[in-house]
Length: 253
Image: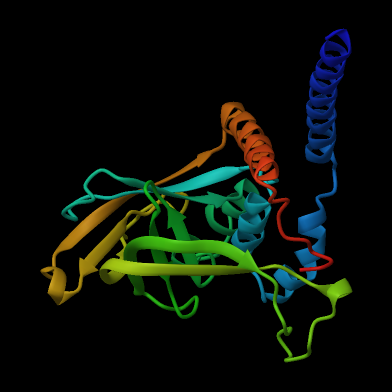
Protein backbone atom coordinates (compact mmCIF):
# COMPACT_ATOMS: atom_id res chain seq x y z
CA UNK A 1 0.00 0.00 0.00
CA UNK A 2 2.82 2.42 0.88
CA UNK A 3 4.46 1.68 -2.47
CA UNK A 4 1.24 2.43 -4.32
CA UNK A 5 0.82 5.72 -2.46
CA UNK A 6 4.39 6.63 -3.30
CA UNK A 7 3.87 5.89 -7.00
CA UNK A 8 0.66 7.93 -7.13
CA UNK A 9 2.31 10.79 -5.31
CA UNK A 10 5.25 10.83 -7.74
CA UNK A 11 2.96 10.68 -10.76
CA UNK A 12 0.90 13.62 -9.50
CA UNK A 13 4.10 15.54 -8.80
CA UNK A 14 5.31 14.81 -12.32
CA UNK A 15 2.08 16.21 -13.78
CA UNK A 16 2.43 19.39 -11.73
CA UNK A 17 6.06 19.79 -12.83
CA UNK A 18 5.14 19.28 -16.49
CA UNK A 19 2.38 21.89 -16.24
CA UNK A 20 4.79 24.31 -14.56
CA UNK A 21 7.44 23.78 -17.23
CA UNK A 22 4.85 24.25 -20.01
CA UNK A 23 3.76 27.57 -18.48
CA UNK A 24 7.39 28.78 -18.27
CA UNK A 25 8.22 27.73 -21.85
CA UNK A 26 5.00 29.24 -23.21
CA UNK A 27 5.65 32.46 -21.32
CA UNK A 28 9.21 32.69 -22.66
CA UNK A 29 7.96 32.04 -26.20
CA UNK A 30 5.44 34.89 -25.89
CA UNK A 31 8.10 37.28 -24.60
CA UNK A 32 10.56 36.66 -27.44
CA UNK A 33 11.27 39.91 -29.35
CA UNK A 34 11.29 38.11 -32.71
CA UNK A 35 8.19 36.15 -33.66
CA UNK A 36 8.86 32.96 -35.66
CA UNK A 37 5.61 33.15 -37.65
CA UNK A 38 6.14 36.83 -38.55
CA UNK A 39 9.68 36.10 -39.68
CA UNK A 40 8.65 33.09 -41.76
CA UNK A 41 6.00 35.02 -43.69
CA UNK A 42 7.71 38.43 -43.79
CA UNK A 43 8.79 38.02 -47.42
CA UNK A 44 5.33 36.92 -48.58
CA UNK A 45 3.71 39.87 -46.78
CA UNK A 46 6.16 42.35 -48.30
CA UNK A 47 5.51 40.85 -51.76
CA UNK A 48 1.75 41.11 -51.27
CA UNK A 49 1.28 37.35 -51.58
CA UNK A 50 -0.11 37.25 -48.02
CA UNK A 51 -1.79 39.82 -45.83
CA UNK A 52 -0.87 40.56 -42.23
CA UNK A 53 -4.34 39.45 -41.16
CA UNK A 54 -3.59 36.02 -42.70
CA UNK A 55 -0.40 35.82 -40.68
CA UNK A 56 -2.29 36.86 -37.54
CA UNK A 57 -4.84 34.12 -38.19
CA UNK A 58 -2.06 31.53 -38.47
CA UNK A 59 -0.59 32.84 -35.21
CA UNK A 60 -4.06 32.51 -33.67
CA UNK A 61 -4.19 28.85 -34.75
CA UNK A 62 -0.89 28.30 -32.96
CA UNK A 63 -2.02 30.22 -29.87
CA UNK A 64 0.53 33.00 -30.47
CA UNK A 65 -1.67 35.87 -31.59
CA UNK A 66 -1.31 39.15 -29.71
CA UNK A 67 -3.97 41.78 -30.51
CA UNK A 68 -2.74 45.30 -31.17
CA UNK A 69 -6.01 46.98 -32.14
CA UNK A 70 -9.45 46.11 -33.47
CA UNK A 71 -11.83 47.16 -36.21
CA UNK A 72 -15.37 46.45 -35.04
CA UNK A 73 -18.55 46.36 -37.15
CA UNK A 74 -21.92 46.71 -35.38
CA UNK A 75 -24.85 45.47 -37.46
CA UNK A 76 -27.91 47.70 -37.83
CA UNK A 77 -31.01 47.14 -39.90
CA UNK A 78 -30.36 43.54 -40.98
CA UNK A 79 -33.11 41.27 -39.71
CA UNK A 80 -31.89 38.51 -37.44
CA UNK A 81 -28.49 40.12 -36.82
CA UNK A 82 -29.44 43.44 -35.21
CA UNK A 83 -26.82 44.65 -32.72
CA UNK A 84 -24.34 41.85 -33.37
CA UNK A 85 -20.65 42.82 -33.51
CA UNK A 86 -17.88 41.49 -35.73
CA UNK A 87 -14.19 42.20 -35.20
CA UNK A 88 -10.97 42.14 -37.19
CA UNK A 89 -7.48 42.45 -35.74
CA UNK A 90 -5.81 45.68 -36.85
CA UNK A 91 -2.49 47.40 -36.31
CA UNK A 92 -2.07 50.76 -34.60
CA UNK A 93 0.87 51.76 -36.80
CA UNK A 94 -1.07 50.82 -39.96
CA UNK A 95 -3.93 53.09 -38.94
CA UNK A 96 -1.69 56.01 -38.03
CA UNK A 97 0.87 55.71 -40.84
CA UNK A 98 -1.42 54.73 -43.71
CA UNK A 99 -4.86 56.10 -42.81
CA UNK A 100 -5.06 58.70 -40.06
CA UNK A 101 -1.95 60.63 -41.07
CA UNK A 102 -1.33 59.07 -44.46
CA UNK A 103 -2.90 58.74 -47.87
CA UNK A 104 -4.24 55.19 -47.90
CA UNK A 105 -7.99 54.97 -48.52
CA UNK A 106 -10.32 53.73 -45.81
CA UNK A 107 -11.98 51.40 -48.32
CA UNK A 108 -8.80 49.40 -48.77
CA UNK A 109 -7.98 49.56 -45.07
CA UNK A 110 -11.37 48.16 -44.05
CA UNK A 111 -10.98 45.33 -46.58
CA UNK A 112 -7.34 44.68 -45.58
CA UNK A 113 -6.15 45.52 -49.08
CA UNK A 114 -8.61 43.27 -50.89
CA UNK A 115 -10.59 40.92 -48.64
CA UNK A 116 -11.12 40.94 -44.89
CA UNK A 117 -13.02 38.49 -42.69
CA UNK A 118 -14.56 39.96 -39.52
CA UNK A 119 -15.32 37.33 -36.86
CA UNK A 120 -18.49 37.26 -34.78
CA UNK A 121 -20.19 34.91 -32.36
CA UNK A 122 -21.61 31.48 -33.20
CA UNK A 123 -19.21 31.02 -36.13
CA UNK A 124 -20.68 33.99 -37.98
CA UNK A 125 -18.47 36.27 -40.08
CA UNK A 126 -18.69 39.35 -42.26
CA UNK A 127 -16.59 39.57 -45.41
CA UNK A 128 -15.70 42.91 -47.00
CA UNK A 129 -14.10 42.55 -50.41
CA UNK A 130 -12.88 44.99 -53.05
CA UNK A 131 -11.09 44.39 -56.34
CA UNK A 132 -8.53 47.18 -56.04
CA UNK A 133 -7.73 50.35 -54.12
CA UNK A 134 -9.59 52.57 -56.59
CA UNK A 135 -12.94 50.85 -56.12
CA UNK A 136 -15.74 52.87 -54.56
CA UNK A 137 -18.01 49.85 -54.01
CA UNK A 138 -17.21 46.47 -52.51
CA UNK A 139 -19.07 43.23 -51.89
CA UNK A 140 -20.63 42.49 -48.50
CA UNK A 141 -21.25 38.96 -47.23
CA UNK A 142 -22.65 37.94 -43.86
CA UNK A 143 -22.46 34.19 -43.41
CA UNK A 144 -21.61 31.17 -41.32
CA UNK A 145 -18.11 29.75 -41.13
CA UNK A 146 -18.13 25.99 -41.55
CA UNK A 147 -14.37 25.60 -41.73
CA UNK A 148 -11.58 27.95 -40.76
CA UNK A 149 -8.39 26.02 -40.28
CA UNK A 150 -5.05 25.56 -42.00
CA UNK A 151 -3.59 23.16 -44.55
CA UNK A 152 -0.08 22.53 -45.85
CA UNK A 153 0.35 23.88 -49.40
CA UNK A 154 1.64 21.51 -52.09
CA UNK A 155 2.85 24.21 -54.49
CA UNK A 156 4.12 27.76 -54.17
CA UNK A 157 2.79 30.77 -56.07
CA UNK A 158 5.02 29.87 -59.06
CA UNK A 159 3.67 26.32 -59.28
CA UNK A 160 6.78 24.69 -57.88
CA UNK A 161 6.35 21.78 -55.49
CA UNK A 162 7.13 22.79 -51.93
CA UNK A 163 9.69 20.70 -50.07
CA UNK A 164 9.14 19.74 -46.45
CA UNK A 165 11.97 21.99 -45.23
CA UNK A 166 10.41 24.98 -46.99
CA UNK A 167 6.78 24.29 -46.11
CA UNK A 168 4.33 27.03 -45.20
CA UNK A 169 0.87 26.89 -43.71
CA UNK A 170 -2.10 28.19 -45.68
CA UNK A 171 -5.53 29.16 -44.40
CA UNK A 172 -8.47 27.06 -45.49
CA UNK A 173 -11.80 28.84 -45.05
CA UNK A 174 -15.34 27.98 -46.09
CA UNK A 175 -18.11 30.50 -45.46
CA UNK A 176 -21.71 29.94 -46.54
CA UNK A 177 -23.43 33.32 -47.23
CA UNK A 178 -26.70 34.11 -45.45
CA UNK A 179 -26.99 37.81 -46.45
CA UNK A 180 -25.22 39.47 -49.38
CA UNK A 181 -25.03 42.93 -50.88
CA UNK A 182 -22.62 45.76 -51.63
CA UNK A 183 -21.00 48.32 -49.37
CA UNK A 184 -19.64 51.84 -49.60
CA UNK A 185 -18.28 54.20 -46.96
CA UNK A 186 -20.23 57.07 -45.49
CA UNK A 187 -18.45 60.19 -46.70
CA UNK A 188 -19.64 63.72 -45.97
CA UNK A 189 -18.27 66.99 -47.26
CA UNK A 190 -15.48 68.32 -45.07
CA UNK A 191 -15.23 65.07 -43.11
CA UNK A 192 -11.91 64.99 -41.19
CA UNK A 193 -9.45 62.52 -42.67
CA UNK A 194 -8.84 60.81 -39.33
CA UNK A 195 -12.53 60.26 -38.58
CA UNK A 196 -13.68 56.64 -38.82
CA UNK A 197 -16.10 56.15 -41.72
CA UNK A 198 -19.26 54.12 -41.24
CA UNK A 199 -20.25 51.39 -43.72
CA UNK A 200 -23.35 51.80 -45.89
CA UNK A 201 -24.71 48.45 -47.07
CA UNK A 202 -27.23 47.91 -49.86
CA UNK A 203 -28.65 44.39 -49.59
CA UNK A 204 -29.28 42.35 -52.73
CA UNK A 205 -32.82 42.31 -54.10
CA UNK A 206 -33.55 38.85 -52.70
CA UNK A 207 -32.99 40.33 -49.23
CA UNK A 208 -35.26 43.30 -49.92
CA UNK A 209 -32.70 45.70 -51.37
CA UNK A 210 -32.64 47.60 -48.07
CA UNK A 211 -30.00 50.26 -47.47
CA UNK A 212 -28.62 50.46 -43.94
CA UNK A 213 -25.62 52.00 -42.19
CA UNK A 214 -23.41 49.77 -40.05
CA UNK A 215 -21.39 51.19 -37.18
CA UNK A 216 -17.60 51.07 -37.50
CA UNK A 217 -15.15 51.51 -34.63
CA UNK A 218 -11.36 51.39 -34.32
CA UNK A 219 -9.93 50.89 -30.84
CA UNK A 220 -6.63 49.81 -29.34
CA UNK A 221 -6.36 46.53 -27.47
CA UNK A 222 -6.21 46.94 -23.71
CA UNK A 223 -3.82 45.16 -21.36
CA UNK A 224 -6.80 42.97 -20.44
CA UNK A 225 -7.29 42.02 -24.10
CA UNK A 226 -3.64 41.03 -24.36
CA UNK A 227 -3.72 39.04 -21.11
CA UNK A 228 -6.86 37.29 -22.34
CA UNK A 229 -5.14 36.39 -25.62
CA UNK A 230 -2.18 34.89 -23.76
CA UNK A 231 -4.37 32.83 -21.42
CA UNK A 232 -6.63 31.75 -24.27
CA UNK A 233 -3.66 30.64 -26.35
CA UNK A 234 -2.18 28.61 -23.52
CA UNK A 235 -5.35 26.83 -22.48
CA UNK A 236 -6.32 26.09 -26.09
CA UNK A 237 -2.88 24.54 -26.62
CA UNK A 238 -3.19 22.59 -23.37
CA UNK A 239 -6.65 21.32 -24.29
CA UNK A 240 -5.50 20.23 -27.74
CA UNK A 241 -2.44 18.54 -26.26
CA UNK A 242 -4.61 16.51 -23.87
CA UNK A 243 -6.57 15.36 -26.94
CA UNK A 244 -3.35 14.34 -28.70
CA UNK A 245 -3.40 17.28 -31.11
CA UNK A 246 -0.07 19.12 -31.06
CA UNK A 247 -0.94 21.27 -34.07
CA UNK A 248 0.40 21.35 -37.62
CA UNK A 249 4.16 21.18 -38.09
CA UNK A 250 5.75 23.74 -40.38
CA UNK A 251 8.58 21.31 -41.14
CA UNK A 252 6.53 18.17 -41.83
CA UNK A 253 3.19 19.76 -42.77
